[in-house]
Amino acid sequence: MIFTLVVSVFFNTFASCNCSKGSILIEYSIIMKKISLTILMMVAVLTVNAQSGTNSPYSQYGLGILSEQASGFNRGMNGLGLGFHEGNQVNFLNPASYSSIDSLTFIFDMGLSGQITNFNENGVRKNAKNADFEYAVAGFRAFKHVGVSFGILPFTNVGYSFSNSDFIDKSNTVYYTNTYTGSGGLHQVYLGAGWEPVKNLSVGANVSYLWGKYNKSIANTYSDSYVNTLYKYYNLSVNNYKVDAGIQYTLPLGKKDRVTIGATFSPGHSLKADPECQVVSYNSTTSVTDTTSYVVKDGVKLPNMFGGGLMWNHNNQLKIGVDYTLQQWGSVGFPDYQVKNNVPDYSLNTNYFKDRQKFTLGGEYCKGAMYRKLLSRIRYRAGVSYTTPYQSINGSDGPKEISASLGFGIPIMNGYNNRSLLNISGQWVHTSGKGMITENTFRINIGMTFNERWFAKWKVE
Image (cartoon, rainbow, N blue to C red; front, side, top):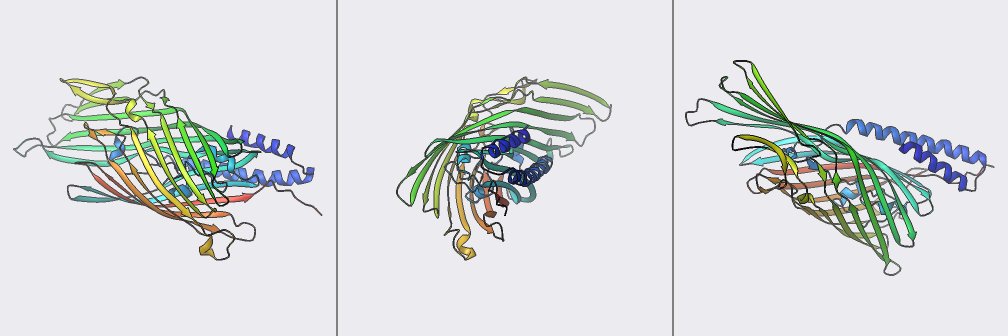
């Protein structure tokens, strides 16, 4: 469907340009090769994205760890971008920015990450490693003042495996072991457009298909075979939509300075999914198995999500901005299995989530693309963030996050292209809560932004 729409846009664009029939066919052939390659690369990312990108025990709660939906250049500024309005990157954080994409530009951006996480609980430390494809997006100018983007992004990640053991009484004869495992997550494919109806004012929207599943389990086993083993399996499958709207306004402050104000909104809605919990009791001595299934109809929802950002641009060299986002998770419930007065119950817990807020400050500096020295062409980026928890764990606030990043946008220069970039950034994320596991994650993000010229008129002698 996306491919068909893209081809339709190309034909409309060619029909409106002043080109000869031969040049149209040549240009069309080149463009179709680029689009075909883009679609194939996105399909590859779709396949790989079935893997989990986390080892965090906190991903066992709710829908999992909320992914940082940012591309390579955003990650260098620690996810900053709601007020970013430039035509050389695909900024899907605010779809209004698509209107700034240049008419002679096709942008394809994809990225991956590798990370090492140190877990610390009561002086016990462990390390875990992960590597994952993060995103693949593309953008181009469709009509005058209208830009289009499409791509695939992660939404949540679930991935963990750990256990704990202890004796059930002071006699130290029988002990239990609880084993926790989980995998999966949600992903989204989006198609978006940005339009500049009047000078300096842009609006846009992304329409996404949200899909995925997770499988979580808890095994409660005992060293005494006469004691029943208890298993709990949690399963969820999602196939639904998500909509994100954005607006940006750029205010000139002189010949060299301008400020862009951006805002986004994503309406909350039901995901029309039915989470399931299976409780299995098994006795290895008698080989008797007892299984009980619970289902909560329409038990998962997305909250309203708001965002606001401000970015100051000085002479296209120095860009400094601040973002604030609010996700109203506290207004939605989530299925929770509990035993109350010896009666099992699997129902919506309205105290499961909390509103999530994130504050980000960051910026980028580049002396200028016209300078000869490579160091003058590099984009230097940095950012810091503070994020409040969206989970409530055992009646207490979940872990908060403090993070910081440093990044570079290194130009890739050859005989026919000097606008593509290699985006590299390093990020540190500190996750902690009172009486909870402390996580320190060190992540390397690598993104490639291919910025190609097209729709240029061919001149045949």
